[in-house]
Length: 193
Image (cartoon, rainbow, N blue to C red; front, side, top):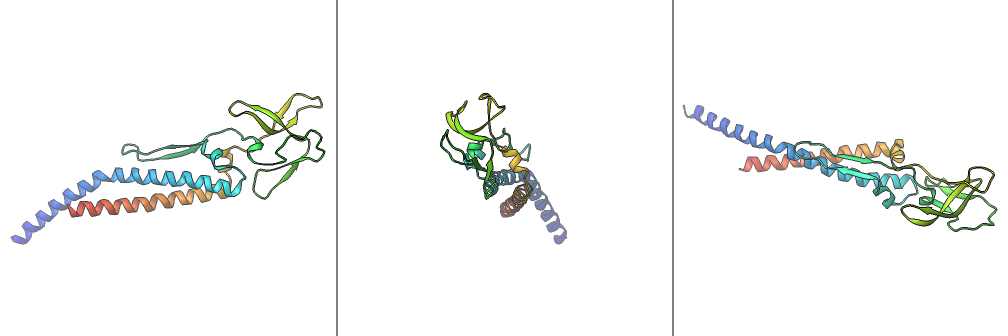
């Protein structure tokens, strides 16, 4: 008789603890997703800069982070943006020189400096930055109009196979590691109560 009563008590206690664990699981999942999203955002920045000659601030401007909650349980990291002006990458020369005969050179990817025939460095007006020095090219034989030269956008850089693969792997690892940690922490707390 005593054994049966003990089993019932243990069973009731275990059910209560499992309910407490189940109630806290969505929060653990949301916390893990948020930590993974922050890690993913950092790794996006690092991996793009390994491949392309662009500054971290130019990348950060385009990246958005939507955090997870107990209700949604998923976080989202996205990037939206237009093609980036060539002067935000490595551009040689960086000064206006009207009598220059040699073509200007630009490197969008690291280690890939290329000459751009017909391009020149000039003073340009930017809505956000005001007057800047940038690369341009004539659209016809006449003096005007000219068009500003640009490289890829940040979302295009993220679609690079190597960059995308590394980012996905590190994001999944970060989520799994953090989720396992949160689950073990909650189990310890529930079992000690």
